[in-house]
Length: 180
Ligand SMILES: [Zn+2]
Image (cartoon, rainbow, N blue to C red; front, side):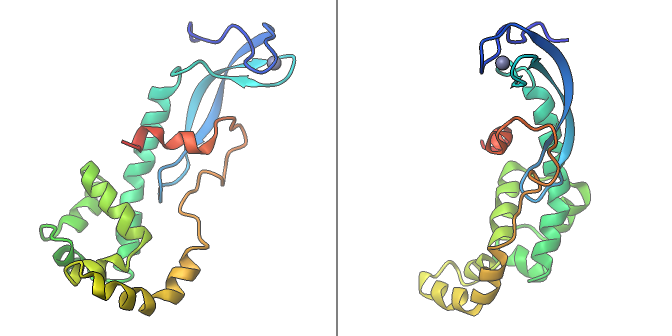
C-alpha cells in the first residue's frame, strides 16, 4: 500500500517482510480510544511490526483529533460536577456560555483545549482563579480538597491502555500530534 515502507526489519534486519494494514487505537487525554488503520510491515522472522517514519502520521492525527473533540464534553461535564458553568466562566474570565458552546459543538481553540485539560485535571484551580490567583490562598484551597485530590490521583485520564491488541507504538508517542 505504501511505497515508503521499511525494507529491513528494524529489529533483526531481515528483509522477509509482509506489508499489512492493522488497527491501532489513539486517544487524547479524557478522550475515547479511537481506532485507526495504519500501514506496517511485519517481520516474518521475528514478528516485529515495523513502521516507516511518518508513514501513518496523517491517519493517527485524524484519529487523535476525533478523540480530542469527544473529550471536550467529557471535560466540561467533569468540571460541572464541581462548579457551575457560569461560576467557572467568571473565574477563568471566559465569555459567558463558552463552556456550553464548546461542549455542544465539540470544538474549542487550542488555548481552550489546554484550559479544559488543566482545569479538568485539577478542578480546585478554579477556586484559585476565583481568588485572583492569590498564592496565599492556594494551600487553604488544596487542603480543603485534599481527599478528592488523593482519590483522583489514582484514576487514569487516558483510555489508550484499555484496548490496544495490535499496538506496537509506544503510547507516549500517540500524543505527539497534540503536544504543540
Ligand atoms: Zn525481524
